[in-house]
Length: 346
Image (cartoon, rainbow, N blue to C red; front, side, top):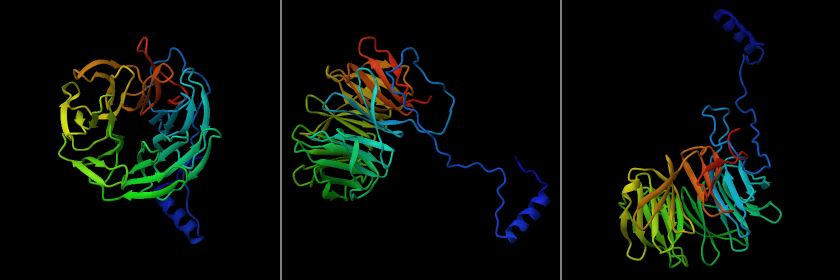
């Protein structure tokens, strides 16, 4: 029932309540009403290709991270939590209870454990039991942005205040890099020599993987901020910035080419497929690029959102795509996209 009083009466009513140590509560909504995400255990459904444009609720459905594991299954890291799915059928195999569900990055170590970077710290999950086996590891910052397993099996953790090197077995902090040029380690990648490259707010920084010392710094890149990195089969690094896409040679530390076909586009995600084509996720669409010519081979439509955050090619004979409005899969035969209803707005 909504209480309506004239203005003078509201004042008198409020004063009277305050004399008795009470506070007036007049038609207030509870802003903390819990929202329950929906995860139906079904395969990607046929037919429905798009989502309604209206906002139904205030749940965030973004899918920031996709990680194919050693068994061929796909781990989905979203702001609804962590899930493991069969990429052939789309069936949800498990949903993992985590201390924080705002997932930003995923990685699998050499013995199969899943590492989860969240907005509130680092978590280790045992896929055999689907249980959290380590969390609350001391880091320069608990806001995790990127994760990488190096050739020796160590875990590199990029945060908004630098980089940490972790021993995956013990979950122990081995070294930190808090004076990282550009501060924020938005993305991490290996080069062909096994060294670490960090994309930051101010370009690229190369790090020696054996002693965690800075080797080189590449500043003054077009676009300045490096948002995503991908190592090509030929050993070059592809760099996504808010202003476009670059190919970089780590050996000579020089830019090889700037891709004109995506000039001015905000690049959010990159990944190579088995045909050595580069999938480019942008703020406004998903593109397939011929890296030899720099030409766009095609664009995928009918995704839950045009803002592409993560890409997993050749997973279960599909291309899996994480967007700001949920998860979708693309047929490699027809190139048609369909949403997975377990991870999109109902």
